[in-house]
Image (tube, rainbow, N blue to C red):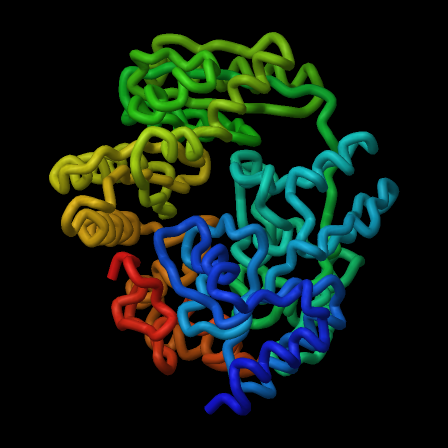
Length: 483
């Protein structure tokens, strides 16, 4: 049971952070009832710490009052990971937005969790360096959120996702202790606790500082646009390219539906009559890039490409990538609502899985637009719907579950970069045995985490948590949400 009253909780937090950095009025809380999913629930109070000590103070006060703690960055998460389904204290880390160090010699950056992903790339660029993970939301998503979800992005096919670029973390644990995990030195000995934190979605602790690996910008880059009559041909081109020994830094697919949504808005140069397009990028020394680009072009033609274009100017390359990065926003402008999925399948299974995705969508009566990281089999079907239609949201969720089942049955997984969060926690039993899940619960116990620390996320079960999404009504559930 919580100690004291809600008013006491607010006063204690105001004493630690100042009244200006504590929100508790209903009209203020409503802004923080959701992230980028269709899940909604109200927090009891929202706080904006500026230092590690203030984060620890917030966690300590929440602990004293026995209320949940939920960390949040920019709110761009796509699995409900920052939705406070049991209320409590929502710890928003956007004030902690300083780049503390960029070391060109060691190729290391030290940042606070509220730093925007693109801001770090821009800070490293003048030194000839870059931070490789580049989610499509990089203009607004935070490094802390990327770490929580082990985010990827178009250019992580060759470089790896966030976990491959995190060296060390400063973390506030659920008991309010501050610890440092990992080391600035690569391959430090001992158990990789840093690796456990990356992708833990705020269930093991709150990251307050991150030491990140930077990579050197390559001297040459070539961006290709391959046009196909079908998603099947484009999918085959992905496997054919890699079979021929070239691993591009990016292989992004856009199907006909998304091209017809994006192109009129962005004018990126995607043919409106294309069945699918692959955006492929290779980098390295100039001679190697030319050779790799020739292999890619030959592989695409062998798979049935009707045309392969090469961006000759930097502006053309930027325009092609703008179309890819702006795709999700374009869907938002083209439909009343959409449900963005995140599954992974082996590359060789892309043709058959994509066919099943489209058939399931047609059978359910929904338009589905696909834009995804084809190189590593990370699918992102976007199901468009009108939530005002009776049972539309319920039917969309049923379709999403069916698509995730297809991914798992094909030998894949339920998430590639968006996280499990609240959205897919009940699907964890599809891919893990009871012993596996017990081991993951044991990790939480070892970190001192309880059902109070970002509750109802990632793992099935938990006191007062729904079996999936928010099927059990909570006092904090927002009126009008989809359940």
